[in-house]
Image 1 (tube, one colour):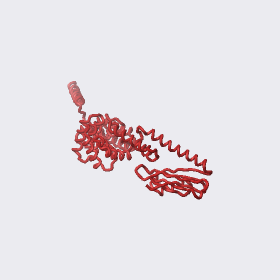
Image 2: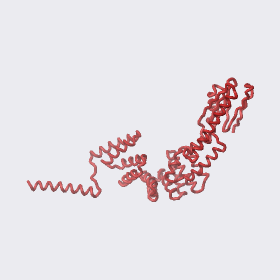
Image 3: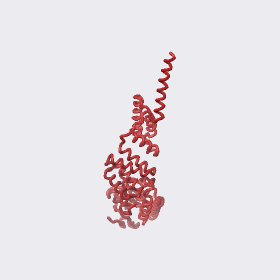
Length: 366
């Protein structure tokens, strides 16, 4: 009996020693079927939470799932969520583990390329992008991320080619503005100022925050300062509402943003002063304004409307069509006759002594 107890104890000790050896060597036994099933349920829960915008809930579920079964798909999803939470070191650790399991996706290398570039590890970042492109030669993100690395390595010509290829392969995906801006920085680095300005203006028009995204990498800062100063001089010589608003849309956080806002406020103060003067000069005078959203890249139509009987005056600005501008001014005036102008300033001269005559419109079509 004692011998039998000793044999059982020996088996238990041997099993314990084997488990300890596995743990000490870094090799863990594979998860049980029950653990894999629970991990899958937690992964599904994390996906649902992520799609619903619940990042914290998704991360909690993924932490539990990976603790049970560190599958590559769970690690990829957690890396993506960690990037959104600005936990870049944690995201890279997850991708390292996913890639280390073998048979990685090209997107794994591309995303790690971006993370390594962010950390300043440009040599290994380029190697990751190269590997992603080797696996999938049509992967737009890998070319875009390698373009970023090229800018940091002062390889502007190669960076320009990579961003251009990313634009061709990526089509109209959500990274267009990012790649166009990167190509603009590459052009600027090669002293191709006109091409750089064209790309930067296009990128900022669709995503005003893209300059700040590149500034996090120390890129485009000098270029943006030069372009912003030029744009502000144009918008304020003389100061006009449409160019000033277009300037703020493209440079909302620029060095001259506060000056542009002050110039706009000054223009509106002048409009208010003109309204007060009109009321003092003309008994019954009233004033209204309707503003559209023509935008900096389109013709801007406006109109002046006046009632000769009631001395009510209104105007509209920044509409996409003459019909819309006329309707807006007429409605603001209360159904008055409207006179349209395009891309110019216009004035209405009124004779207090003769309401039926003395109406003149300073306007032109171009």
